[in-house]
Length: 168
Length: 168
DNA sequence: AATGAAACGTTAAGATC
DNA sequence: GATCTTAACGTTTCATT
Image 1 (spheres, rainbow over the protein chains, first blue to last red):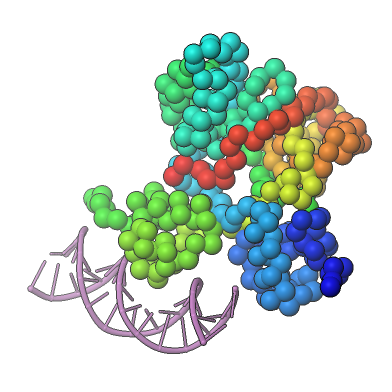
Image 2 (cartoon, rainbow over the protein chains, first blue to last red; image 1 turned 30 degrees about the horizontal axis):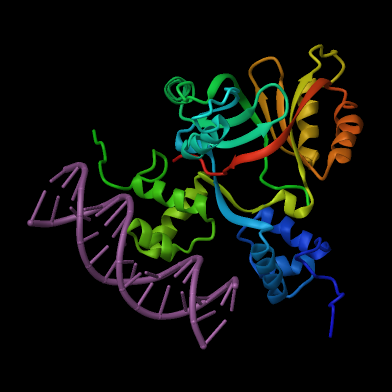
C-alpha cells in the first residue's frame, strides 16, 4: 500500500509550494494555459491540469469569473453602507437577520455584504449608476426593509486597490 | 443625424442587449465556452468571440481570474480597516497620501482599498491567517507607517454575499 | 434600387485539453 | 482524440444616396 508522501497531497491537507504557485497564476489570470503555468512552476501541462482540477473539486478554487469595470458599463458610483438591524425579534415573526440576509441576495446593487463586529451590524458595498439611483435604493429599498433600523453611507472617491487575489 | 436602433454598436457607445448578456455570462463563469454563451444569447460562437474580444480591448472586461476561497488556504480572518492619514504635509516630504497609496500596493494582506468620503480617509479589506498575523500587520506595518495617524478595525463575522459581478 | 458598412454564420485550421 | 478557439470567407441587414 502507499501513502504518497511526495509533494502533492493537495487536498484534505494543506497545499504544497506547487499548488500555491498554481493558485497565484490562476488568481492573476484565470485563463492562463496549463502549458504556460507549467513552464512557470516547473511542471508538465498535464500535471498542472490534474492539480488544478483537484483544487477546483476541493472547492479551493471557487470559480472563474470575468471582471468588469463598473464605470465602463455606466456604473459610476460605489458606496460602502453600514447597516444596523432591528434588535427585537417579535415571536411570531422571522428573525430580522435572516430576512435581511435573504433580501441582500436579491439586490443586484449589493455586490458584497459582510456581518461585522462593532457598532454597525453589516457592511455593504453597493454599485450603482449615479446618485439618483443610489438615492432610490436607499429610500425605496433599504430603509423600507422591515429589518433595517438605520444606515450610514460612505462614498468611494477612488479605488486605490481592487484585487480578487488572496495572499497564498 | 442617426440614432442606430439596431442591436450592435458595441463599443465606444453604450452596450446593447447582447453585449450585456455576454457580460453576465462571463461574470458568472469566466470560462464559459463561446459555444454555450452563443446558445444562451442567440449568437454563433464566432459572433460571441468577436464581441468578447471587443469588450476586452475596450477595457470593459478588465481581466479573467480564478477566485480562491480564503479559508481553504488557511486565511481564516478578514477585517475591514478604517485608516486616517496625517494631514500636515511637511514641505520637504512627499504627500502622505501618495506614500500611503504606494505602500498599500505592496502589502499583500490588503486585497482592497478605497478612499472614502466621511471621517475616516481609507477603507481597507485585509485577509490574513489568524489574529496573531493581523496583530502583527497592524502593529509592525500599518501603525508604523509614517502617513498613518490612526485606524479602527471591524472583523468579519460572516460573508453574507461575495460577488464580483456588477449589475449590467 | 444601388452602394457601403457592420455584424452574423459557416467552415476549416490551429491550440489546448 | 476531442474539444475549444480563432481566422477567413461569403451572406445578410440596414443606412445612405
